[in-house]
Image 1 (cartoon, rainbow, N blue to C red):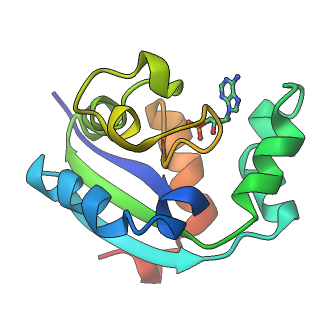
Image 2 (image 1 turned 180 degrees about the horizontal axis):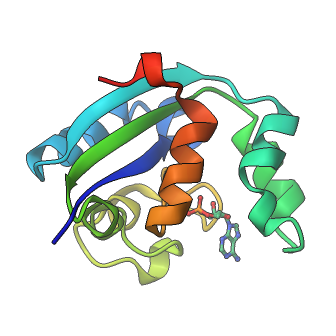
Length: 139
Ligand code: CMP
């Protein structure tokens, strides 16, 4: 197993519903270390840039509207196999298919408003981390 970093976001629904502490608590209990963290409100253009990989998908406009609808929390998580560990904590994108005890199974009510985002591979993690954080913002 490799030491990895991954990018996590607590989405506008997670922030609005008061789940920041709950989600971060799960990261820490699982042994993921927080290497950077900030709250920000993405503009529509920033959300469109972050999710550019999905620009041909039918849900792109709705997703980017939702992601720019309120504040989010962005974090860098670090640990052995952090990308998969974080994905296991989140559960499947569709909360109806998420394993019991995962963040999305426990809290999500919608495939789009699914509380959290996490990088899906090392290359994506590098790009997504660079999107949010510069060198001075990481410990
Ligand atoms: P996320 O892991 O952030 O990656 C893309 C996001 O698109 C996903 O979580 C959901 O918020 C959103 N989304 C909306 N509809 C769908 C869909 N049908 N399939 C996948 N993702 C969707």
